[in-house]
Image 1 (cartoon, helix red, strand yellow):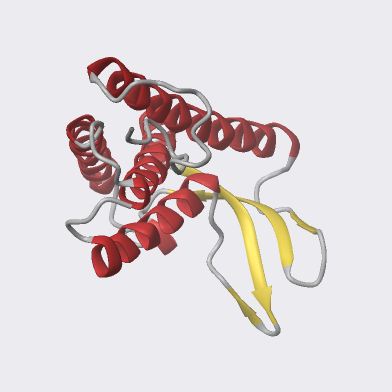
Image 2 (cartoon, helix red, strand yellow):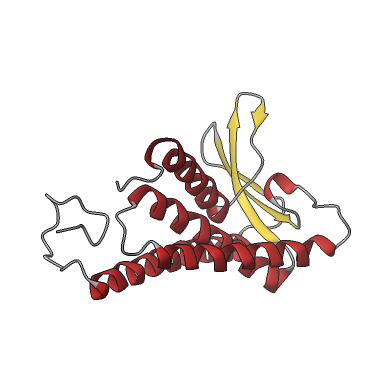
Length: 182
């Protein structure tokens, strides 16, 4: 029996049959995971907006700060000073990418593609999290700052981290599992 979730055959104690019903259940679970990523992202941003003044920095330790920033651009503030048109461009791109990825997940729901599906789930969850911010506020709230010595990584949020980890999994899938079940 094929694994209906992310479990290996040995770990599959649910005995869910490998049929359309189990594939639809798999897709439903994937969408729940996407929703959890979006909720974690939105709740963390709500907390930052409500409790930390803009540009205030709270040092958690020598390499992580929590700081409140607004980013009207894309990753690493790319296009942040573009004059406003980038908001609608980024909304359009994020919306289209989200639709394509959800359709892709629907298409692979009956295949055992764990690395690919995990990567897609993370990317679409992050894309939707930032899409909500852009629609509601015209910018995203970034708040995690990682520091190595005198170098500070650009401030980011949970959605950005989700997209980055998801993209890494997609690269791993392409390099090592392309065309194979895993």
